[in-house]
Image (cartoon, rainbow over all chains, first blue to last red; front, side, top):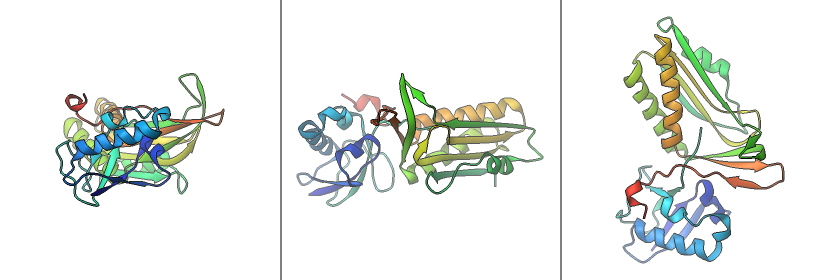
Length: 88
Length: 152
């Protein structure tokens, strides 16, 4: 299966595009997505200070609600990654 | 209407304190407070030229409305609130956020303004990337929205 990860804040360093497609095993949840993200970061992006992103990020569903690690992902689902915030 | 919230695209428009003052004025409310946040030219010893604000539009507007309505319930239901935050590339000196409040009395007007600002920093999905005079840039660290007990 595949999820479409909409990038915000520091996660934009992961791609030049707004959405990063990530391949995951079938029946994956947010926890699986964190593991996949951690692997992507450790392969290519460690020097960008993204080491903690897979742990500290929250994720929003398409209804803009925070989803927990047990949330079951659907194929092609659009999920927003929400790195630690700091506006104002 | 006593509540206005918006995200202003920096390359299309500017946040206006005049517009905010017009919105909040009311014969019922004798106290007004206005908080203006601007991009400053220094942070942690680095010379800053601009900040790019990234925003999750729908979630930010939802959070702004919740925060402002909570503030009204908590401090003064008759208050008027104007809240705008910018999005995009904002040079030093320009406005990034404006909160304007009118309320029956000064104490509530100050409290509402402060409450909204602090809640935004902890609840609204907004991110800052600083641009420096040396030509480099950096996303700033922030507050995680993931529950603390889940972070191993």
